[in-house]
Image (cartoon, rainbow, N blue to C red):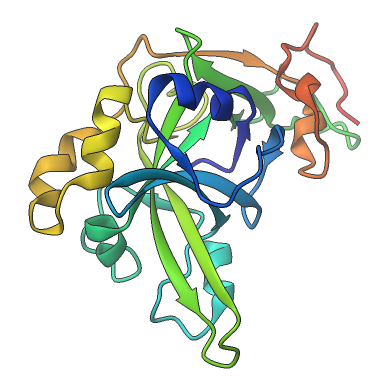
Length: 243
């Protein structure tokens, strides 16, 4: 899965890699601990222009009467996204790319690993970024939801796609976000609905083995209210007690 990520330098680097338009956005502020339900910046195809726009992280299908469904739809599995009722329309016609500096994942608790206040082993946070230092493009799908009870309540929402872990990721977690290479971004965003499944399935594969690097970070990132660039710094040492 993907439950936290970073949008900081990646937003500024986009302009040097892709010809993009900002959709009524002031320069977005750097954020280092983005969690589901937050507003995020994503790249979409709007009238044949690559456009950066704001989305709520947690997909609310257009047909849903209950917006709380978005709390459960922060991620979608690439293997089933074409068939699941909540996702199949969006994957065909409303794909997005979420620029990120990197993402966080937590390794399982180990007997010889860090321990919490109770003395029991706890999960350990890791930060993943691209080895080449370039922005990471996370594959996603989107939906526009209109509140039937309030015509002024219209939300752009998205979820991130996940796929099987590659060998870099496997020791930490069995899933990883779909990472789209820069030369596939335009195809991902613009392929017509009728061709989408056949043309884009290869994009949903795990990232190549040499794409990512990772390091352990401070347990401060466990709390989504914590913010700051220090959250992605490598931990000086693995503490024996986190709290």
